[in-house]
Amino acid sequence: MLTFNKLIEKLRSGNIYMIIGNGSKNQFRYINDVKKVLKNYLKGIPKNSSFLYFGDAPNSKKPDIGYVFELLHKYRPDISIYMIQIAEVKSWGVPKFVKDVYWHKDYTKKCKWGGCHNGKPCSNTKKWVNIAKRIGIDGLLVLGGGEITLDEIKLATKLHIPYDYVPIERRFKGDGKTRVKNSDTKKDKIGITKQHHLGVVN
Image (tube, rainbow, N blue to C red; front, side, top):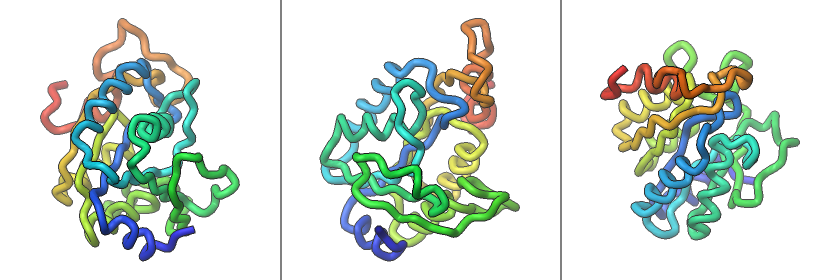
């Protein structure tokens, strides 16, 4: 188990990246699209790099950002995946593809999983922001996403972290129940990041 300082030491020696996007309430509509994007992105990632992962459970039947990390490990086993997650959910376990874990208690009921609260990064988001300020983060891949993702895009911009935004379609409209249909608008198919991302036409 890692402390924050030990995590920093492990990350310091190489390139650091993140992937954020659709969680369990959105999921991905077409997993083959995700696979293509991921494979293409990984072509530009140096060998033995590290990725930060925030504990979304990998499940191929409910494909969300957690499953993307399982695919990442499959495509590039040379990459080290470090998990950052709140200590409260230790009982959920740790996926086999994770090299090591930093459990923390730096969260509140109002901001448990990440994003911003009262304009400040909190929980898991606060941790990667601190990493970026200490040693830098080399890149970020954004695959759709919800409110927390949108907060993190804005933070990445402020911290001058280069990122690739992919307006990828989600399976559900943010409630985990209402399926996206072919007749839906592009806004509905992609969600809040499509509506608010700079440079994306509504």
